[in-house]
Picture 1 (spheres, rainbow over the protein chains, first blue to last red):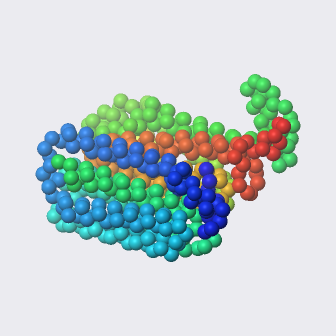
Picture 2 (cartoon, rainbow over the protein chains, first blue to last red):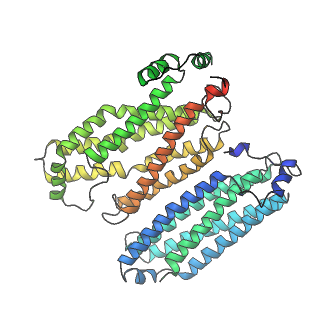
Picture 3 (tube, rainbow over the protein chains, first blue to last red):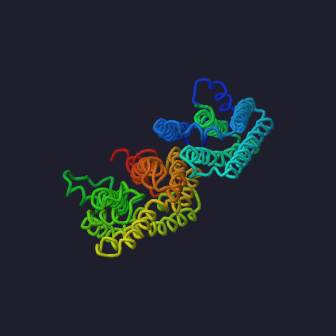
Amino acid sequence: MRPMSNAAMNAPGSAEANSSLGNAGLRIPGQPDMWAFVMFEALIFSSYFIVYMIRRAMAGDHFLPAQEHLSQGFGVANTLILLLSSWFMAGSVRSAREGKYDIALRQVLLTAACGLLFVGLKLLEWSDKIGEGLTLSTNEFFSFYYFLTAIHVLHVLFGFVVLAVAARELRSPPRRSQEIVETCATYWHMIDFLWVIIFALLYVMR
Amino acid sequence: MSASIAAAVTPRPSGLPGRIAWHWRHDPKAELWIIWYAMVFFYILFGIVFVLLTHVIPPPQPYWDPPRVVQWFNDHHYGLLSGFGIIFLVTGLVAACNALIGYSIWRMSVSPAFAYSYIAIYSLSATPGLLLTAIALTVGAMRPERNPDLIYWLYDMAIMCFDGTMGVFLIGTLVWMIAILIDKNNVFPKWFGYLNICNLITEFVVAPAWVFKSGVFSWNGTIAFWIDTVVFAIFTVAFITLLKRVIVRDDFGTGPLPDGDARTAIHPEA
């Protein structure tokens, strides 16, 4: 397990950087430690999803009318924004591999901007629902809605710290660890992946 | 380091009493091992008391009315008194856990302020998370003839202290996580630093227990209690195991920890 700070500090053009580029297709991107975390998070969220599905099946028709109150527009917009953010993040990893650090940094900032937009839209959606009198304790569907979306937003907030780490690596020539940028990208893609399932369960599934 | 050398050249006898005596005399890590075993003893005792003796894990139902709560206290009268009697005797062992984790942070390349913060936060957290629960349930069990409404109040207070105050651990977990992730001495693997995020999230997941009296988000619900408890149990087993590895690897130096046993790393012939 290589520590973050001791990770391959690949200066552009160095042998290590070139080797990293050459073997990009043969190795796990980023730290294996982050992949272990992603797997564990996926297990935890899967358990939430299974509980939701069981409760939904047990509740009969009670979930459907509540689900009608959700705005598909918000859900689709949130999904597109996060997919776009993941696209920027993937671009950042590619740019960093090619030694285009300025572009990579800009793409990380665009990822963060999408993340901010996502959180802003989520806050707007929550305030909209609370304004309609639909709160955490209104019914079981909305309990799950607020719980799943809030836990996901918490992960997005952690994601801003992760993006800041990536930006710090890309800004400073002595750092610029490809492994850390990939590790940060892995976390951000996890956020996207989890949201797509939450979107499907809460907004789409009937 | 000289103690390490002495330990390496003195043959270790076979048999448990002989080995214990050898470690007591020669092992420079004997003190760390005492603290580690004290921590393991505390967690085992905690499990036995809370699960088997007092039946607080899993927590009883939050929607019960006062007569049913009084009945629960009567059903577990002796278990509550004897179980929490044991807890009052051994609560001080929390200091062993905090000290060992504090030591592991102190062994990192980060500022000792992280270790001090962690120890201070977790020492304070034991009061609502453990002692208040034990006191409230013991007071409830002490006089079964007490007004049922008062027993009901003690019941809510006890379970919410135990289950609902997990957020007090939030900052402590955050401090430990940051220390692990920025550490250059490789004291803990980075995956454990990331696992701290999962433990940290559980502190938020329990929050709906303050709102719901039944269902998956209540204090004994599938999400607010069971999934959280499984994550916490995995986290606890992970950190106890990793602390053992830290002791084995510790070379009492200040730089990166060796990957293997520090004694054999220094003296491969030992």
